[in-house]
Amino acid sequence: MFGVKSMQDLLGSEIVQRREEGCWVDAIEERFRQLAAGDSPDKLRQFEKLYSQLDRKKPRKSLAAKEPSDLEGIRALRPDGPRRIPLQMSDEELHDRILGAWLARAAGCLLGKPCEGWRREKIEAYLKLANAWPLDDYWPVAPNETAELRLPDPMKSTMTRGNVTFMSRDDDMDYTVLGLHILEKFGPNFTPQNVAETWLVTLPYQMTYTAERAAYRNFILEVWPDKSATWRNPYREWIGAQIRCDAFGYAAPGHLELAAEFAWRDASVSHVKNGIYGEMLFAAMIAAAFTTDNIRDVITLGLSEIPAKCRLALAAKDVLTWARKNATWESTHDLIMEKYGHYHWVHTINNAAIVLMALLHGNGDFEKTVSIAVMGGLDTDCNGATAGSVIGAMLGASKLPREKWTDPLQDTLECAVFGHDKSRFSELARRTAAVARKVRG
Image (cartoon, rainbow, N blue to C red; front, side, top):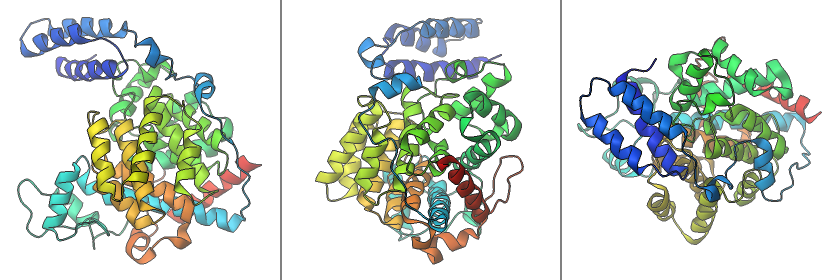
């Protein structure tokens, strides 16, 4: 099923993943390097043998005990929390908040698309070339681009300052639409199996990446949840689930525990441990953002739905401490990268830390929040989108800067989900609010 190159890529990533989970993999890694450098005629079989050895590795007990993947185990290790906060909000305000979350997510996502995967240093260099540092509007096109600092031409016509006329297709937005579709079709009792089957029917395989593509391949092979999250899926703690949280937070305003449970059901088809916690954390934070305008409270409430001593929670607590002590986001960012920069650029933990940094240093200001999230680098479209979603739910559409940020989107979303291309944000918000009212009862 796998070719030599694809198995080599999977195996290399799996070795890293196993080490991060607390497994001892040095001997396997050394053998992998020898095989990768050679030209053995049975290289594929040898790679598969090494992968089977990795599958038998057990993580360090002390770490594994802090990071379960089952919902019951997660709940047993979470801090005390309110679980549900009474929401006193008219239907009109609820709609405005949900519309704000959709629009702010889209604007933040679009802001980060041109520089996806760039480090902060490269982003700063390009923006200074364009005389646009610090960022305070959609991404500019520098008239004097260099070979090292250059945007792909297709981006320049639809995703840059002065050229935005709709929200360009992005998986961050596809999954928000897909989450809404799942809630509408199956209701609040949807299952991980419903999620898997919906992907197969509505989501093009070529529009999935990393953990989602591995899980999708597993569905096709009839490897279903929860095994779909782990079989030949070394990306299971990467950011993919975290970017799928939003519809579940929108649908459960004030109901942190339910938003996190929705997120768990979705995340568990493709992720484990911190990959799951990322989706649960931000779904709960979005649900909390409907109830308070205090960012620190929103983060603390979100953390009450994931294991208190998991790696993601510890990173979040670091960021809370650093942001309180540091006057600038750059100082906080330096500390994040010093401690968590070893993770892959699309891992959950380092990117979640950047989002939290942006929310804290943005201090309730939409433009500052999404700009900091993008200037921090790594998975910039994801981070801009997630930061935007939280602050958008807190502020509502009526308090977002329309002329610069939301009007250029022209209420239009380009989407890969079957039957949802050229969706209207206004209509998506109306449908989401209808689901939220049903969930509230």
